[in-house]
Image (cartoon, rainbow, N blue to C red; front, side):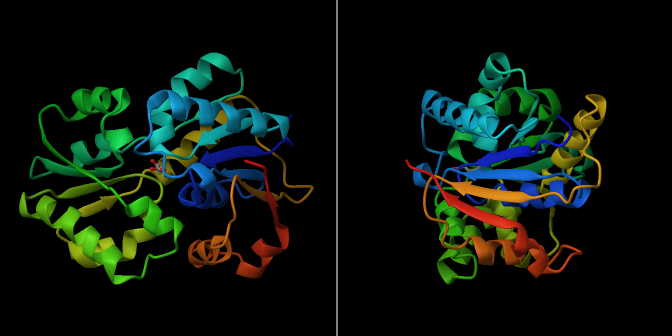
Length: 273
Ligand code: DGL
């Protein structure tokens, strides 16, 4: 059981920002990543549709023998994690906008949340906001269009920067001192976001906390993998993965191991829709 891989899924490549943190914290673990690129974005879709997609992907990951599943998508966590936990015995780790740390650290009493429509309008977000940020002004902004731009590897394009300015400047004008990235695609945009924010607010990415929680659960359940044999990383998608290599390279720049080492282990497989 310990030797089995950790499953990770997202509507696309955004969850790679979570995979990176998992890999850094759990270097001996094997990972199977599923990107549902054929049906991306999830943000504008209905809750029961996202539940069905998440169910199908979970089934696939369990067929691959995964010992734990990380739902590396805020939108899918919001729409489906309750449903998945009720249906399957395997442990699930989800991700949600990091309202709590932003609320604790805020000095202006104003925090900004950038997330998809599905996440912001979901029950989970309402409950968490009420619990941790009821005393604060929470400025929410739908990140419409950003997921599609990241999937198209358009992080460096002017239109991406223009859209981000439209979303972030109003938050800064209102005086937020923390901006929470409530979608796993957005950390790919951190360099542009930082250039817009210019130190006026702290940007929070909850992915490292998800990795810590995953490690805690694996430890509790005695599922941590030993060092040998060497772990593997398999990537699957419901559609072509044209930008995977450059997206991984963008992430691997921050990783201690050489990029080429990663590529040796990659096994790309296209699944039927
Ligand atoms: N990465 C997903 C999230 O964290 C993107 C959702 C979408 O596909 O719209 O919410």
